[in-house]
Length: 244
Image (cartoon, rainbow, N blue to C red):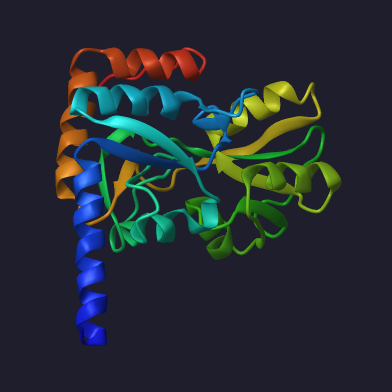
């Protein structure tokens, strides 16, 4: 067989294999390091708001879910490469990301970002050293704000940078920072004003997987209509009230 023809045949077979598998089993990609959205529990299992939500969405859409963890900075490339079928990882819907992948409708409303610093300090949020997780809307915002951006691969590392004095403050989703500040026993505190950037959070899918996107859109919509999505948000985010 001609080499190029053979490669094309292998690629075509792989495409059919992925499409066939996705008809029954959906591989859900997440970071596993961003509570309460997603984290790995003491039993080594993916847990959190998005795990519970994702399992219910799969059930309603007729899929069986399996969960895959992946580092944040390569989470979109690995979706595109076919290492999993969706992204549920607290990912805001942005025009830049939509150039590469598709999103479902939002399953979590736009959440303001906040700054957190050591309690009792007054960092210069416009010219100081601000930590943010790499490849996030917060990192992009800090980079364009005039402050000095220091990026880290995980959200945990941004918090550690503030505690060690490597950064004056961190900018991240308020929903993530709430529990961090609460658990710090007074070591950390919110500073400055909230920052409104990015859209709501949605499920990422490959542009070629319109069937998955449409089925998940229908499942999300059904959870909005019957109130179960609002109840799930309230459960994981300190009673937060959301109406759709």
